[in-house]
Length: 201
Image 1 (spheres, helix red, strand yellow):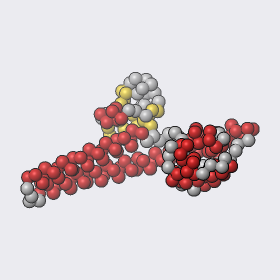
Image 2 (tube, rainbow, N blue to C red):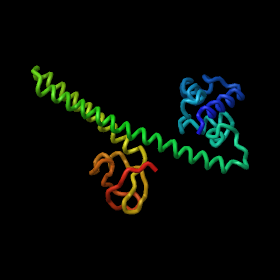
Image 3 (cartoon, rainbow, N blue to C red):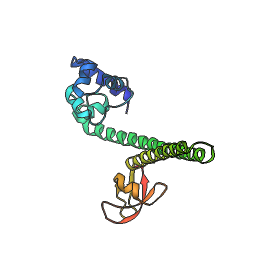
Image 4 (cartoon, helix red, strand yellow):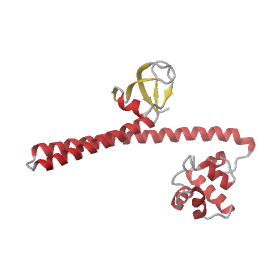
């Protein structure tokens, strides 16, 4: 998926409709900076904004992803290409998020250990020890909470019984037994509890 081509297409269609970036941003209830990012090929519009953007510009979502008005005879082929490209983009983004999960987990754990170590071994008043321990606990809880949220939403879990792929609830990920990214959870399809492995597609 060519972000530069899509950005130029958005810009072209906006200008054809005689709409400024600010006016388009106002219609979509977002900042004109976001419009500028789309048009410069930095990122795609959010999924929530796409239908309204396409309506305003008089194009289809397939046209948007293609970066051009798609001829009806090529519509199905282009749609398949765009869906495949979107799946690849999601997989790449999920890989980045899962790498970020490790970084967040590592930093929050090291920070927690360092603050507890300082509170335990450095001479200071009791209230300072308590403050350091509380800060350490807050950093650790915040880091672990965000790491689990990333793990929950990036990619899928695959049931070892029926091979169904699904995104579990945050609560089920938080409270499940786990070994790395393999968690013992109940599959929403077959209803059996087993060790479900994290997969990206």
